[in-house]
Length: 170
Image 1 (cartoon, one colour):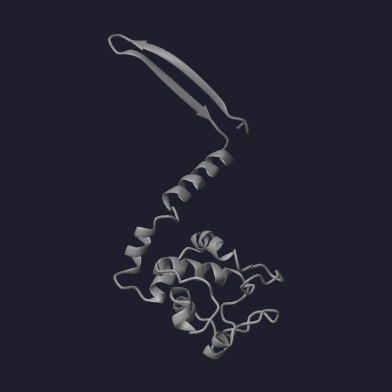
Image 2 (image 1 turned 30 degrees about the vertical axis):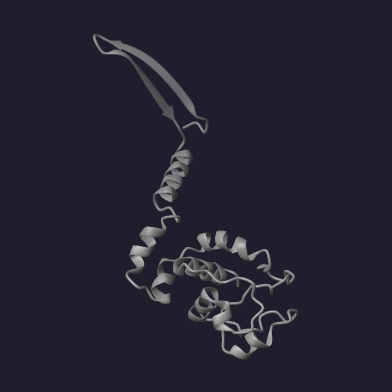
């Protein structure tokens, strides 16, 4: 079968029914697979937040939200964070530390080049999904005295998406 697309148009007149236009398309197998993949992506759109919320259940835990989290949606949300944070291997620190590999690391220790506040260093422990969720929800409540400049992300699903994205950056 040809790799090019062939389109034909035919016009037929049926008695009492007016003109009808017929369009046919001949495509290659690889084009059919590409179209099927695109339709699958649209049908399983990562932007269907309400369906993901329903799947997480009422009053979902961090773990339940993690099961429906979408790293691609988190990447889009992270663009807000990128004003202060980089997230590439070896990337520089900006107003905030580089967050590459932060999940699982000691809190306030991920970047040896960044001057973390004493407030964040006093928290101790490691960045788990639960602790990152608490931080993203209310940085000043999590580490009173922190220099983190945002009030937090109020939507638990947004936080889960950002955490899923951070977990891909190792």
